[in-house]
Image (cartoon, rainbow, N blue to C red; front, top):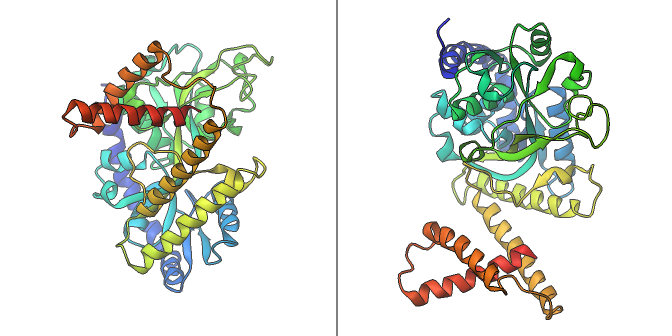
Amino acid sequence: MPQRNCNDFLRPISRRWISRAAVASAILGVQNQHAVAQRQAGAIGIASADSDPASTRTIADLAAGLHSALPRIQSLVGRGPVQNVADLLNHAIAAALLPADVLPYVEQTGRLSGARQSLRYIAVFGREDVHVLALASVASIERLAGMPVNFGPPDSRASITASIIFDTLGLRVQPTFLSPAAALQALQQRRIAALVHVAPKPASLFFALNQNDGVHFLPVPQTPEVLHFYLASRLGIADYPLLIGQGEAGRGTPIPTVAVPTVIAIADPAPGSELYRDLSLLTEALFSLAAASQNATPASTGADLDTSLDVPGWQRFPPAVARRQGQATASQSQRSASSASRPNEPRVGQTQQDRQKLLEEYTRWKETQTRSAQSQGERQKLFEEYLRWKETRDR
């Protein structure tokens, strides 16, 4: 069989999936109408990333956490990342949880044009790690070229991520579109060479496996091109002691991989509109919940919220930008007061070596941030400003 790019497989599958989505849309149209009616009646709805029980529990927990600050919040059942994008663009829902790589995916498959220009994010709500489980005979992800690799059901979170990663790495594989459980069985029967699974670690799909099963995790290359879409991560011994650590704590080498941020996304509303005001209230409630969770238990809903993370390829909702800048200003003032109480402490950039290193970092930063600064005096002023920023950041 001639090798074909994974996109060649995705396009016919995607067309069939669109047809299925059209049928599902007709069946679930009442739910969308209900969502619109609820929003028009004053409720602010957030859709789950998917319709599976774990996703619906997650969005219900988030809505419960927000309820005291925003009683009008409502959790809705999402219909998958791609359909959530369509529902946001059609204003059927006010907000939704989305994997961050859904934007390059809809562009790659030629669907939902204008999504990147219209969608914004407020905050990050957790992340999911990419697991590439392969036969033990496959030494690296590059060796999968030309082999059957399971991406997961069409338009699922795993198929979105697998498509982007393999395309970014320039690896042509033969995608299959089995469910996770069916793919694991196919891997153990050697009908496929690897599977891609996207889930928070440790993922229950792999709990029953060990190194005697003839499978292992493959590292995902953390190239600049891959990290343009994803966050660096790793699968540790504590996560999978039977697959990585040979069942013994402290033995084995962690596996480099990447993680997919989950964003709380909206379709950028017109400033001054009722929806803009509602989403501004949602933004305030999310930032307040995240701040309150800093003193709460790690298991609390707000602990999954990250209001500071910049997500590759995404623009932030303007009220979230303003709220984030306010946080940064307050944090900087707090650090400045703290440093004033420790005047004899070594300062960043104090030694010549430190200053040279910072100067090199500053030069790279200046190329993209300070093209308008022409005079030596302006450049020196910006450099000193950069040193002050660097000092407060590193404390």
